[in-house]
Image (spheres, rainbow, N blue to C red):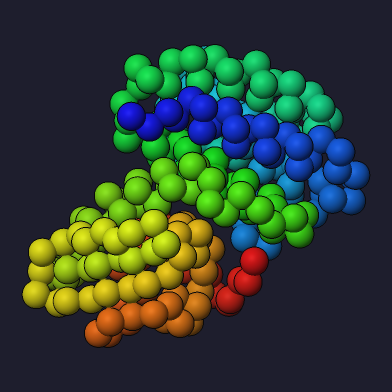
Length: 224
């Protein structure tokens, strides 16, 4: 069984280590992968998710308005205050993750992994690209992509360093090879169409099958 709690706890620790000693200039940087948010805003969002889960504030969950409230509430907090809140609220969520619907926990983990690497990109501190959180994000992304692939009457074989997954059962036979980190970043709209076309494809390149429905590809390339 996947230990979501341990995976999330480890991610929370990594992000804390990244930002705890960051200076104000670093905390104020806009993240290239999420240019509407500063580094401190991304951490506020991560903490705010756990606080909202514990408080039952789930109306409009995952909408722009829901996430904006998380950031706005903590806009003037120190980073230490945000991290202290995340430690308290995150540990409560971790304690009950095993009883929550797996699809919800997997989505939460993918979101957190996405923002970990948004933060890393802003701070120019890459790492943890083979983490359990990335693996969970990839698996969740593949499951969501199944619907898109089916609607396109395609069969998509996705290969990466951890193995291969085939989704869909349509007539269009398509294969793609890339490392798992790049695939997850593509799924979450952190890569441009041209970048995805540069993956190793069998048959026609079909970037639209990789990007999850709630995201859109970047208008310009992002190299991390």
